[in-house]
Length: 380
Ligand SMILES: *Cc1c(COP(=O)(O)O)cnc(C)c1O
Image 1 (cartoon, protein in one colour):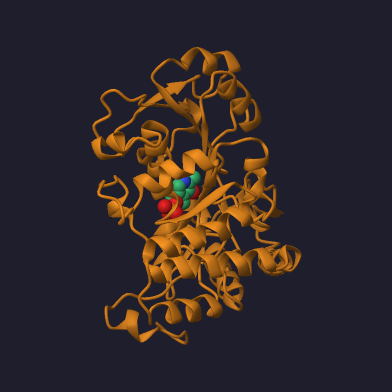
Image 2 (tube, helix red, strand yellow):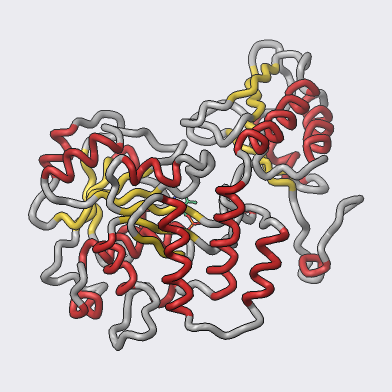
């Protein structure tokens, strides 16, 4: 590794840092915590506290930030997904909490639009539930949902993410489900920023909503936030690491450390207090820099795209047409990843013939390295 700082802790293990132009993806380390977050975690590490009291107090911060009745810090959005389903199945029955993952006698079906199936949905069945699909991959109606709800339905799940379609929409999903007295739980892991989304889905009437703490919010990578209606959130607490209860919850393997609880609430407060427009401008100027450096290459079209339904922040998108004679998309990515430092960009997935360079995790100055290397590779 040349020129760049290689933190000793990683160097000792022989693992080199990379440039993350792929967004807040788990596989590349989520996000970088602000110094204030690290300081808060350092402070937290130096005292013992009652962990349940701490998380209940932190949950009040989460609830306020989300405009919800009650909140909790979880060990990630996936952990929150497990707890949401567990809560919908057990309610506030200690016997039910003790019995999971055996769901005998409980409503234990989670309903999800087929088009929203994704690699995170295993978390919906971890607590013992069964996943039931409705609609087909690309066609779905309110009746499809209504006809799928039955006396075994524990909840309807809904995913908000750039890589899944919206189906009948969250608002309509809530309308249909509530008509049948069934709660709606939402996985919106990577949907903040925009900051308004912290409360948006609650305002639409969702019963519980989960976000990752270690993505756009900039908290510890293995943290998440969950908020929602008070009665269901009480059931969530019962199923979580609930050390003052004699009942063993399904959430015990998903405990959140005192450092991570403090890290998450600190990150959340800094995030909600900071200016979204300034953050956006930083991404925009990096996107413009790279786009400009890549214009004029034969057969390569570069556009900056920022549609929030598809893109995490403004980003240059490269498409290849007539007259392009360089390496394929897969080859370009291989070259970038094998370099020093390795550069990870988005694209080539989901049938899209493109390379997209996501700026939300690109540190100052790294856009220059990205532009240099892409120029070399594309112009051979
Ligand atoms: C990242 C992600 C998750 C998992 O979140 P963690 O905080 O890493 O547990 C779940 N669902 C979606 C849609 C995601 O993007």
